[in-house]
Image 1 (tube, helix red, strand yellow):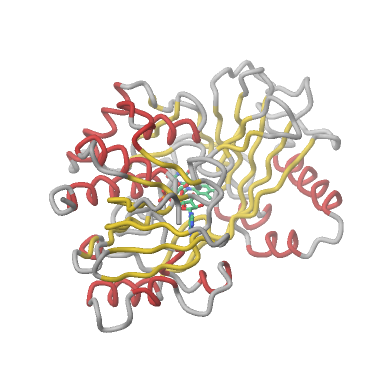
Image 2 (cartoon, helix red, strand yellow):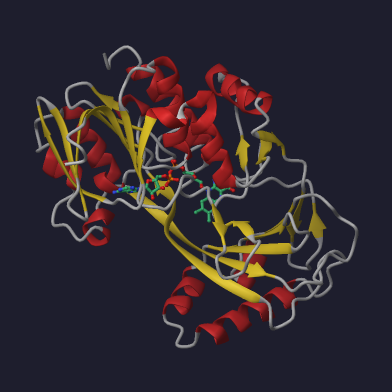
Length: 388
Ligand SMILES: Cc1cc2nc3c(=O)[nH]c(=O)nc-3n(C[C@H](O)[C@H](O)[C@H](O)COP(=O)(O)OP(=O)(O)OC[C@H]3O[C@@H](n4cnc5c(N)ncnc54)[C@H](O)[C@@H]3O)c2cc1C
């Protein structure tokens, strides 16, 4: 047992939704004992930054590079929160160039994608830093016990509250529980956690809580998009053909081109040391499979560089890569939820003393940071007065 503490609230996950939730909750409940458990080494989850140990000085956002708010006009809660982040100078409006490449490799700037519609925002530092700043604001860092590199694999519930067990056998007790990830509610947990029953189903047996039954039923219809991201650490002298100097520059591939090249978008990320990093995203099943089955990773990487050079052959901004650029590859088993979104009405069960937030809830921001932030804000409002 972790020092025999019984937490008022334990939060599973340290992505942006958990950070938003924890910071809002603690601001209003400073006396509560809160713990946060995350399998990763730090905060940020799918909107985090790879700080390379191998290639010094590089910080590449390998998940979400920025975020867009497609609709805050009709949503005061979200609007106020974004304004708060802007006032604190954690984010700024992202006015980077966005290009849409079409079949003839021509550029369009007017198009919009699900990741660029509405207003785009940029973390003033890296994406991981954004999550950190959110949680460390109002001096809240000291108020939370953090447990990193800790994977929860088992959950138990009784009328006193929750008992969680990590893969290493550590136990955590709390009166209330927040899951900012749906791994422990979803069938993918069986394989990933190597368990024989979905952990939340095991903790709350069927017919004991209608809300939980409904939520678990809906999640049966939720699937996840796998993605690959290629992180390219370019050579010392690599630069644009023009004098573009903003932090980011985006190239989206339109449908046919995406099919042809199997790349989804390419994001250039200027580093503090002025080197130019490149992150290539792909959600193409064939490319992902060919990566999984590749016998020689180096040969696979060379193919990626070849494709990149072909794509940008006639481009007036982007230079060719040489074949000795360093690349690392990140495989996201579940980069974004898709299919059925969870209804916000099932976000909190008073009976089972459990709440949920994340990008897997319904709304304009489903599958994106917008949805993560909004669901966390709504959850905090719902439980503010309940957890006494
Ligand atoms: C490659 C990629 C590109 C993307 N691009 C964009 C974009 O351009 N714009 C946009 O808005 N969104 C984008 N997204 C989606 C965006 O990153 C997510 O919507 C958002 O980061 C989700 O935040 P979250 O807090 O809801 O979940 P997460 O970030 O997934 O946080 C959940 C956390 O829980 C942890 N966890 C899970 N299970 C356990 C367990 N059992 N024990 C302990 N810890 C656990 C995980 O490690 C994770 O850190 C992208 C995602 C990826 C992967």
